[in-house]
Structure formats: C-alpha cells, structure tokens
Length: 270
Image 1 (cartoon, rainbow, N blue to C red):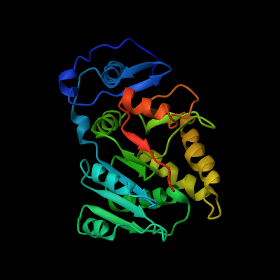
Image 2 (cartoon, rainbow, N blue to C red; image 1 turned 90 degrees about the vertical axis):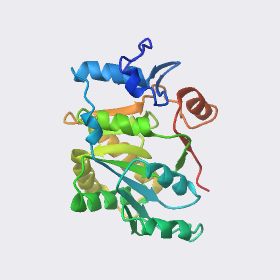
Image 3 (cartoon, helix red, strand yellow; image 1 turned 135 degrees about the vertical axis):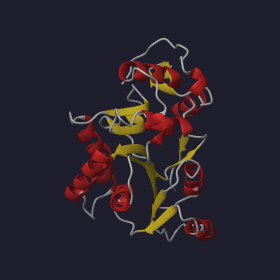
C-alpha cells in the first residue's frame, strides 16, 4: 500500500487520460490513479508495456434479488467481458425480472446457474469458481455481488486489475478495517492461485447452518486476512482506506462518490 505522495502528472497520461481519475484515501490526502500507475510502473516495470491488456478475466456475479441492483451490475459488467457467469437464487419475496433473464439466457456468452439459497454470496462464488476452472482457460476472476449499484463506468478498475495481474494475487476495489483488515468481497479479483486457495478454504470451513455474521467473519474477513498474512501472496486495493471509519455511512459515502470518483453506491437490502 502506498503512503501519501505529492500528486504529479503521469508521464503516460496520454494513454490513461480517458479514465476518470481515481484516488486512494489516506486520511485527508489522496493519490490519484495516474500517480498509482507511475509508482507501480517505476517499481515493477522498466519499459512500459500494453501487453497486460490481454489478461483474461472472467467475472462471477452472485445474485439473490431483493431489489433490481443486479440489472445495473450485469449491464455494466457486460461492457467489458466476453464471458460472464451469473450464479443466482430465487427469492420468493422479490421475483427476478424474468423478461430480463430470458434475454440473458439467449446470450451464448452469459452462463446462468441457479443454486439453492445457502451460504450467501460465498457459496455462489464457490460454485462459480469451480464452474470456471472446469470449463475455461483464464488468468483471473472478478467476484461481484448485488449489494450495490455502479454510479459510473469501472473500466479504470478493470484496467488496473489487468495491469497489476503479475504482481498482485488478490485485488479488491477497497480495503476495510472493520473488525479486522480485509479486502471487501462485493468487488474483488482472484488470480488462479487464490481461486484454488478459496476452493480448499471453502471446503474446510463451509457449514450450511452458518449465520450471516458467521459468513462475514469466516469468509469475507477470515479468508481475506488469511491471504493478506500469507507470505506467498501479495494483495492490493484500488482505493486504500486508512481510517477505521465505515466508508459507507453518510456523509462518508457521499464524499467517496463526489470527491474520489468512487464507482459504486452500497444499498441496503430490504
């Protein structure tokens, strides 16, 4: 994770200037996305190379509909990937949009898998990762749940994942210090090694009777913390939050969106 540096114009700004500027939050200081790339490049790569754009990423979207967030998410994610895996459960209290799903089912690049509503998002992630490993060649995955909506395009975050592929095994949109340091699981990327680690971790720790708090502690915080503290792996977050405050509470949330071009808005599931 980077500490605060004075903002400097990125020497390759002509390549990246079509991105919305993004920031790392460091108390009241920020580092913009261009500066991150400059620092990252200077530490890791001698000659600038665009071959990273060929990194093959497959997204997994976990859905248990309590609102229509999933439509916003699928529509945005569909802009960037040739293959999309959607793992969903039926909620009898909030029916899915069957017309929308019918259109999705006719798209050969979208794989719809219905599962029982157990294990929350992490069971769906587990099913999706196993499906991808058995069916496709890939470099990374992105795990996405339906607890938010996108407020702008996320091509910069996806580009950063590709750029960082050879240097970071686990990359989240942002980290959190809530309970314990972890990368938040609503939008996070694994490389192949982390995929296999997650499969084994899930096999060992999954229990059908787990409560939501169990899932959060064992999987979101526990697995992330396990990888962060494992010397074999390196982790990173696109937005680095240094305070212990919950960034999704007002007015922090509005500040994230307005001041730091944060690309999502967390929503409460009713």
